[in-house]
Length: 131
Length: 131
Image 1 (cartoon, chains in turn yellow, cyan):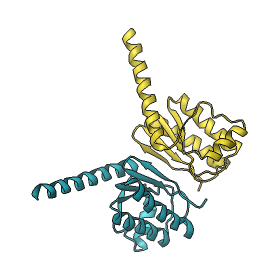
Image 2: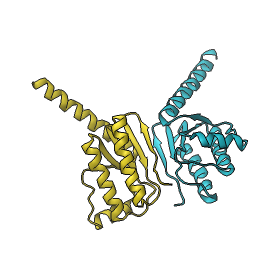
Image 3: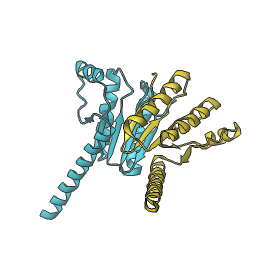
Image 4: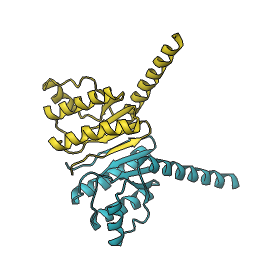
């Protein structure tokens, strides 16, 4: 397999990472995600990593990259389903996943995204009303 | 990896199959799914196979099994994201995926499930009202 499927769910995109990412798979995922955000106008990206029991610095960097890329494309990224051991490893590796939100599971991740989008919409409206 | 993650999304469960299922993985998936349906009271199961470019009779049988098991647990199964080549192979193999619904993508699959659940609810109400 050289592509991880990206599922569109309303305003959000969902990616389930089930296997260790190697170079080409990671690059493809980054490219595909940015293109999907562009094509669908998605406001949020959910990345489920519940299947991963270990994580290395490469994976941490990829998650960070995806977060930064999505941010530039005006979409928030939420990493969901992180196992406790993975959280420990990430911090021990010194990877804080800056620019990436986290939530316990997909449902909470969706709630978080809904909340963020609502807030963004309100801010835009506020800015409009002061003009 | 010996488990495929099952994501809960409201009333539905979502499974993304990204790699070829071997014996233990398939058995685990069946067991996990039935247990999740039982635990969460899910009314529908969405199985995304968009990452699969080939399918064999084993995979076809597993999909059929999942459909039948979910049905007994009062949940509908929808297979989504099937690639054209996979559809051709399934029919050539003589596997009709009985008891399993199909939809083009996750969003349409969810719509289908919503529709089915609405219909079921209405039927129940109708039955109630005639008593």
